[in-house]
Length: 169
Image (tube, rainbow, N blue to C red; front, side, top):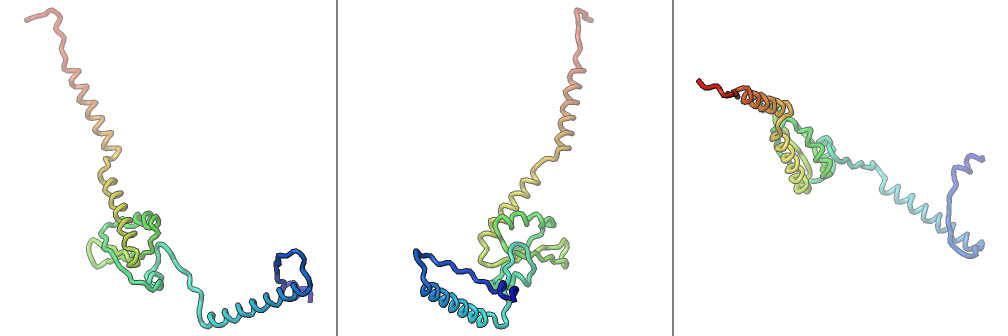
């Protein structure tokens, strides 16, 4: 009996100077009415419906279609498309990656919501800029090799010096 009573505890907060029995009764009645109305609303709206969770970021095509919005896509031929995920998270893009294996080399399609066109183009601009910077950089080994060549050339010049001290032929 005690456990049943403990399970049905309701908290009610009333602000007032002096609370009489009539005020407490009226507030409890109002609380009970609101609880009944909320239960009725839940029964009406809850018939056969599950709460949908909204996914963000990289997701499957089915989850992307569940957003009930028009989809657009971009064709990408880069094999290192996984590095794009960093920029997609930065711009808060919901997208799906699909690989087309029929083409050689394989192509990738990035599907996204049509209303996110601006954010996807900004993310791709930043991503391609990052890749261009990466391709322009000279490797450390190459820099070291070039430095060694310069030092070797400098040494050869010094060895070619000849000193003539008052000797003439």
